[in-house]
Amino acid sequence: MKLSTHVFQRISDQGMPIVSVDNPLASLELSLFGGHVLSFMPKKDNRQRLWMSPKAVMDGSKPIRGGIPVCWPWFGAASDGNLPAHGFVRDQMWQILRVDDDQEQTRIQLQPERAYLNPGQEHLDLMLELLIGEQLTLNLITQNRQAHSIRFGGALHSYFRVQNIDHAEIQGLSGAYLDKVQDTSAEQTPSPYLISSETDRIHVNAVSQASIIEGEQQAVTIGFKGHDSIVVWNPWQEKSAQMADMTTDGYRKMLCIEAAITQGIELAPGQSHILTQIIS
Ligand SMILES: O=P(O)(O)OC[C@H]1O[C@H](O)[C@H](O)[C@@H](O)[C@@H]1O
Image (cartoon, helix red, strand yellow):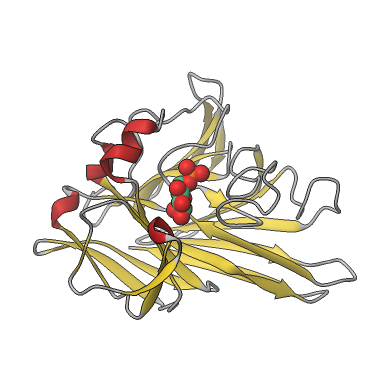
C-alpha cells in the first residue's frame, strides 16, 4: 500500500505492518509494532547505521532486539516489578498519523495505541516524529493535557552497527557516569573510550553530540536534545549467550548509545517535551 510518493506499507511474513521509506536521500524501515525503526541508510555513503540482531523476534510477541526501541514512560526496570522494563510502548502497535515528502526529507508521525504512566491511568499524548533525509531525526513528543503535573522518563534506545567492537571508539562523552555493572558506582569516562567487557553506563553529563569512530572512519554521529543522560550499553559475551534473541557473537557488531531520560522529567499541565536524537 502506497502512503506517499516515497513511503509504502506492507505486511511482513510474520504478520507485522512494516513501513518502508525510499527517498532520494535515504532508505529506512519502520515496524508499527513498537513504533520501532529497524534500519536507516543514508544514500550519501550507503552505509547501514543501525544493527539488528539476526535472532530478533519480529512476530510481535516481544520487543525487537536491534534498531531503535522506544522506551517510555520509564527507562530500565520499573519501580513496580510487575511492569515491564523500559515501559510499555515498545511492545504495542502504533498508528501512523501523517506522512509527507518534500525535497529535503520524508516526515512520518505516529502514536502508540495506548500511552499512560501506569495501567488504568488517563491516556497521555505521545507521538514519535521521524524526519528521514540525509540524517535521521527522531522526536519523541510527550504532551501533558492533564490538569496535574506528570513525571516520566524514557529513551531512544539505538543499536548502532559497528564492524568490530574491539576497534570502535566513542568520542564526545566526558565526566562522570553511573556504572550499572558495578552497583551504579560513579566512575569517570575513560579516554580513549573503548569497550572490552560488559558495559551498562548512565552518563549524567548530557552532552549534545557523540560519535563512534572506527579506524579513520566516523561510523556514526549522534546528536541529542531533551535528554538528561546518555546510556552506553553492550552486553558482551556472557550476557549475549544468555539472551534468546542475541547470537553468541552478536555483541561484537553492535553498540547502544541512547538519548535517555533516566532521572525523570516533570511536565506541568499544558506543557510538552521533545526527546530528540539525530543520526548521521
Ligand atoms: O533487554 P532489554 O530490556 O531490551 O534491555 C537492554 C538494556 O537496555 C539498557 O541499555 C539498560 O541500561 C540495560 O540495563 C539493559 O540490559
